[in-house]
Structure formats: structure tokens, C-alpha cells
Image (cartoon, rainbow, N blue to C red; front, side, top):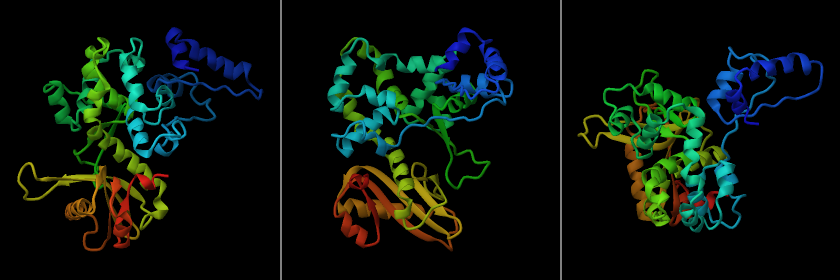
Length: 358
């Protein structure tokens, strides 16, 4: 376990393991399993073409976070709303989920006051595991956590106007701290990519812990300070949960989509500040020319609010250029709670809320 630690202590150990595989374990039924948390180290020193172990693997698994529906197994007494709140903090990583005690906010208040809280040191540990210098990477992640998702916005926030930060972003993507997302209908040459923090805990830390670390170390930072902005913060978390919901319930959708992604772009002739549109999720079936537009709202919606958001969604859909003259359109909203949900469904609308997350 944690093979990269062994490599750091003795870089020649990989060659030793080559001898073990080629000589000692040859013609035996022994299975040798190497585990490591450092993605960069495992890929560069174990799996790469230059590694002495190259060509000797019989299998490779990259562990992913658990799905939202699996988190409830850790907290059987929690409501769906509480599970979303926990997911916003821990994501689907068992290590963080096992740290959390229920009720979540009571635990958070106590954890923030602990002198030995893992909240203070966990990110430093993770980043030093991957990078020799972390200051620039931290600044970039902080910028993204505060909503600066485009390259220019990140550079402005960090004060790096004359600096090329693309190598840093490339490294953050390769080590899976960051995702680079393009619109569903973007061309290969498109420069409309955005950057998002991939892991919920990392995003939570740079949003709430990192800017307040001095107050936390002094023991004067309260969970109430997080709660004030947590509902807004959960909007991004809920969008990812809704993506999982759409994939897992594809057979309940009006058609089976073959592609799904975010969609955003420009509104022709609109004035600055009103010339951009964004749709949370768009699913398409290229063979049947069907398209589903979905908005995700981490809030309770009454019927009037639902219809207003739906009408706005239909307007935004007009700017999506894909088989415009020959496509079948569907529209849906996923919210925290929707009033008169069944009535809206009978009218042909796709309406989902937390009650549907079984």
C-alpha cells in the first residue's frame, strides 16, 4: 500500500520490483497488487513507458468516488437534504465520509474547534504529495472555488496577468484536482473551456477553510459562518448529483440520450451582461434527433416559480444550434422540492425533486 512513499524513500525500488516480478514470482500464482494515492507518481514511475515495470501489469484500476445514492449507507438516519449537505463537504470519498458524524452541523462545529482537526492539514498533505511547490496551485484552486472558472478570470484573481498558468492547470487536471469542461456542442477549436474543482472536499476547503484558516487556528471560527453561504455553495454540488440522477434514470427519461453535458454560449445581438446563456445539462440522441434541456435548482419551487424557470429554459434552448429545424425538444427541472409535481408531470413536464432520489 502507498507504493509512491516507498519510491520516494528509494527510487531504485521499482527496479527491485521488476526483478521480483521477472525472477522470484515467475511461474507462481502470486498476485502482486501495488496501491498508491499519488496519481502523478503512479503514472510516471509505475505505469509509464520509462518505468522498469512497464508491460508487466495484468490489470489497472483507478478508484472513483462513490455515487450520491451510496452515501446514504453511511448515514441511514439522514434526510435527502442532509445527505446533499454532507455530499457538499465530503463528496463520495469514504475517508471523509467516515470522519463525519451525524448530525452534520453539530459535528462540523466541534471539528472546527479541535486543535488537531484534519481540516487544517489535509489539503496540504494531498498537494505536497503531488507537487513540490504548492503556493501557485493553491491560489489557482482558490480562484476556481470562488467562481472564477475561465482562464482570464483565474489569472485576474491570482494577479498572474503576465504569467502563463496553463502548465499549472494541466498539472491540476492530470492529478484530478481540476476538470476542464467545454460546452456540449463546442468545436475542437473552441476556447470556451471552463475549469472546475473535481472533488467536493477540495472545493469546500478552498471555499470555506482556506480563507479562514487563521480564525480556525485561533478557535474563533464557527460553523454558522459556513451555513450562511452553504445553500448557494450547494448549487454546484447539486448539479453534479443531478447529472448522476439523469444517467442512473436514463430509462425513465423521454429518450435514451447518447451524449450529455453542459451547454453555454453567446446570445447574438444582446447587450453586454445579458449576452450569455447557460443550461445545466443537455442530453441528446443523435440518431433520433431528440434533445433534453434540464435546469437544476437547489431550492423549493412553487408552481409559479417552476413555470417561470421552465419558460426561461425554453428561451435559452433557442440559442442551442443543433438540428434546429428537425429536432424533438423536451424540458425538465430538478429542484430540492417542487410544488404540485404530479400535476406538472401530467402536463408533460419533466419535474423531479429529492423525493425521486431513491
